[in-house]
Picture 1 (cartoon, one colour):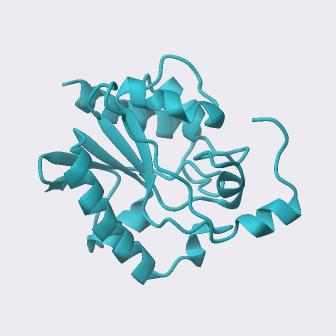
Picture 2: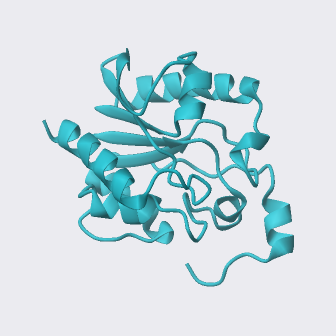
Amino acid sequence: MGRLPDRDELDRARGRTIPDVLPGPDDPPLRVLFCGINPGLVSAATGHHYARPGNRFWPVLHESGLTPRLLTPGEQGLLAGLGLGITNMAPRATARADELTDDELVAGGERLRRLVGDHRPGWLAVVGIGAYRTAFGRRGAVVGEQDDRLGDSRIWVLPNPSGLNAHWSRAAMVAEFARLRGAAER
């Protein structure tokens, strides 16, 4: 990824959006669409999802078997060739997800319903239980496969890989992502 953005670059990144990673016409069908909560400031400054050092998304994705090797955030475009994609519940970049309003998450859930309808992934993997509960009105939801579907797309909620989510160990995250991988391969 090169050098990290400096404080001024991070300040200017606040409120920015970054493009989704979605398959093109020559890519395989979308097996799993990962949906983060929203871009962090490092992601917004670099244009790469899960770009903050210490975020465990890329290592966990690889260790769970969803990617054949450890990808860097700058290689996010390779996901489409693996049948994987990335979007966000709320598009606005913030330093912390708790800076988002419930209304932003609910609106993000509506946008996500449209995106899933257009791209029809086998699985929508929402990365963050709190965002899923708010966006979809499922206050009692837990990590794992959900009973709900969006059209034909099944839903799996994963723990947030942010370094701020310390109560989920990397090993436990790898196990949960691997359970999703197993379901997506069936």
